[in-house]
Length: 528
Image 1 (tube, rainbow, N blue to C red):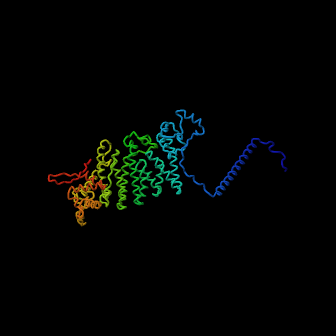
Image 2 (cartoon, one colour):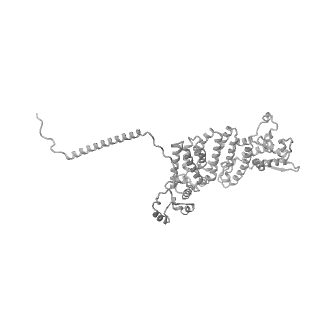
Image 3 (cartoon, rainbow, N blue to C red):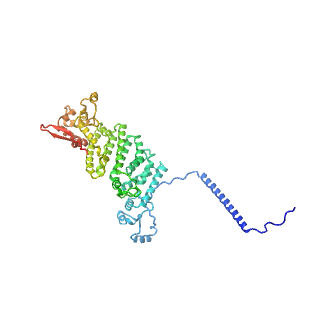
């Protein structure tokens, strides 16, 4: 059987031929692309493996003032531009403060907004124009710079440059009199791993400018990291922490309280999204969640009081630590002066450690502090009727504790009845058998102003100045007459122990009887 000689397809199908040709071209292009990609990968890998040195990170530099309009290259165009009244003027053409004030609304911001850190004139422009765009640009740059320099890529060789950056940021924040949100976000991340030594002075200054916020957030982001370092560091670091927290409280009193005041007094001050409107101008107009500023201040004081009690116990009543604890409470008793309806007394542990200390400084200052608290309670009681708050919310319910402090100080320092007084006491309530077991002569007089262990050196100096040379002197000779007591009080005033003298003048009253003897009594504050 032979093979047929005829052809099955006598003509070419044009459509099928075109389809086959398209498929072949498509497959050829895919193969060529894959080959090119493989070649490029090989070249890239070769270049990576061949390069021995990694690329160096570019050092962050604060830019100088520049403008986005190139008017220097076109002087004729510049003259034409400045001819019109509403045409923007590049900031680089502003020479002095007068020219800035005259053209404030026409000034064009520089291309690099970070230049505001080094230019005082530009700082005035930014604060006066109050542009959200400018504030957002600056916050974005600053947050990136701080995170890059201190957290993402820490470089121990560039300490001076980093300190200079922090110094400029703090200086600008003090100029604005408010905290910068970018700095707060930086602190929230940096304090977690901070060792307490790097850039210590600058970090404490940034904390002092931390804006008011709910106490739960303040405690989590700032106070808890500081607490961990506080109890694991030296007494000098503890004092620096107290200085920073005192400055933070002062910032709340002078600046932040008024800025956040409407959300606690005016219900209509809340926006639709739950954030609060501010009563005063702020460059960084960022809303915060609803909270009570009074509650933040009160809980901050209570938090510091707790760590102070433990710190005095740990550091064995260190005199330097006592000084900064007293500085903090001297700021606390000034709260009613700034129309802040909050008053917080120091704990009994703090008060009586100051009274029973071996140095005259804390003894005198705690006496003066009680006088300041009396004034603060009087101011708060007079303003309470104009406020929609209760005595418990403001702290006025602590007036009984203040009266106990006053009674104990008066009976021990002036009346020589520390362990004999029939009045209630917060520190001198002991069983008589315990006092007798001490076998100390005249125990109640040991805490008087002429026998107190912290004042014996001053007593000896006073007696040397007032008694004849060579005579035998004894501290008890001071209480022999009222004239000698008054001379001794003037001496204490001269050696700068003003607190004791002020306490006696404020809380001790003397009534003259017919037989010319004197009866000493303590002035107790009236309850609310």
